[in-house]
Image 1 (cartoon, one colour):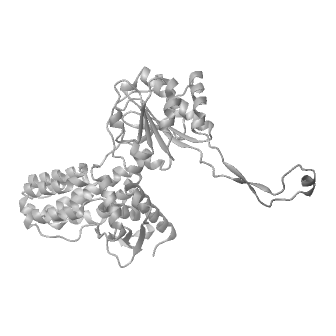
Image 2: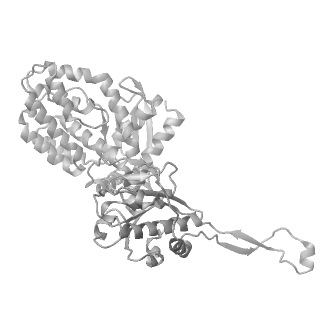
Image 3: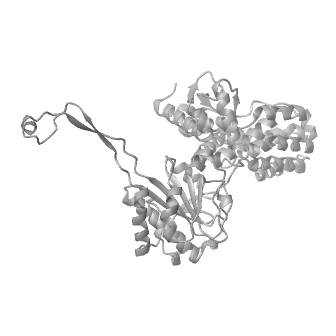
Length: 476
């Protein structure tokens, strides 16, 4: 039976994932999660998700991390072209367990990249499997005289020896060489190396990888089927089919990302300049929230004395209009080596001016610095944008930290101030829609930034910031 807290957490997680990967269809359908005693493994039709009440001896309703991990795993399958993968497997003669494991490695790496806060829940599930099953997998390797008999155990050792990752090839070598006399060590290690490639593949790449594995290891056509692999079943029907079609189209080219952590730092700050504050004053109109109102003829409190003296109109009242919410903005300032000097000075002034304008409008601002990593202060306020440039180190450039920004602040608009030169993470449609970029020339890459942002503009001079804010202000 579902506990209220776990039920609400599971439903919220499922619908948040659905809204991110299939935002259009998510407006029409809602996902619902059930923990069912009669369910032995996780399954879904795309909208309803069923989780087992007990997983490898763990009470799922009593362990939120494991429950969410099982859910995350199941919805990862929802993003994969499983029908096409099954057709490839049938043509190649691949055993069912191999298809399942290849898909599981790819989806868990993908989900951990797209949704960094959920990575720990997948680790929790793998930890349970390691505790309950790993010894049996190692024993099976020791007892297998042929590679084909021990191949599944090799794959499972790689899956669960190191719970913090979806697959660890080095663990296979250790299992094959420590305390075993198997004659197929090299074959097993080569097999693990190919499985390891699934960590970097997109959903669309899975069929090619499976074909490559079967070409390299044709003896797997005679591999025995084994006990059910930890995981679930996917049978999509009804409205869920539309959601799956949209989701798969949105993520088909997204490879798993092992992004650097969003790190905490303590900025050494210095005040903004008078010129920056002057520009901020000119930006206030872009962020102010005006409350509309209208007046109608209607009975209100009737003041007879005021009416007799003609001091008031007795039958009029004011109806407040809808107030636009104060802006919430994450500003990401590039401090990479390519920005050092005059480019960083302009970028920092622009970032500070926008932050000050939003704060004047009673909005919320989170200020981040980034190079190959992202850096935010403990309070997650705007202070990082006011860091003394002489106190900073300037490294390489990567935008993978945005994956954590998009998930940690899901309702905030995101503004990057950068020269746009760096590696990019996969951006889901909703992430891209709420992201804007101010490009600092020269040597900038607007077309590159358009892959992760819906609005990209170039800033040549601080005086032009007010003009370009009209283009960057969210449409809604």
